[in-house]
Image 1 (spheres, rainbow, N blue to C red):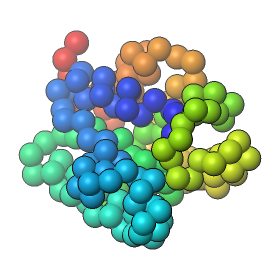
Image 2 (image 1 turned 45 degrees about the vertical axis):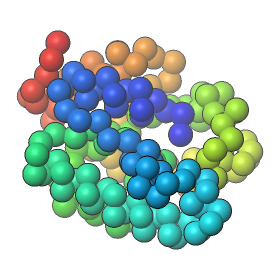
Image 3 (image 1 turned 30 degrees about the vertical axis):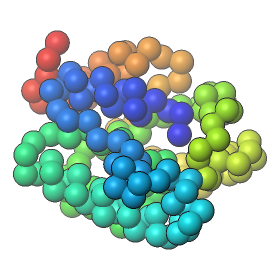
Length: 167
């Protein structure tokens, strides 16, 4: 949350001439309610089950009809079953690494995220997920960088640079 996955993901998809998929947005649309409402009404386990289903659908779409840039929710990658889906689908995964202090500044006014309650819980969640994020194929620092610089760095990654791209 707050690392720039929507901004960077949209720009990357545009440059690659691929479709952009925001996993959380797709879940909200399919369920007809916000992530916070899903957590409140059905619980985290039900949300994670739906998240896995929607991730599987996005990966199948990419296999069938072509490239997808998929923005995963903060906890998606920390679920072993989702990590396995990404591995089996040969997805290139990129952790948009951002210092926790910068993330806190960006998220201080966020009220619609069920697992972000206060600074202490945010830091704890970040630390819990860090080991999972580090398993991504690549790590790209976002911090206070211009999103276009981040996109250019991603496009220069060995597994990405040969893909179709619009300059």
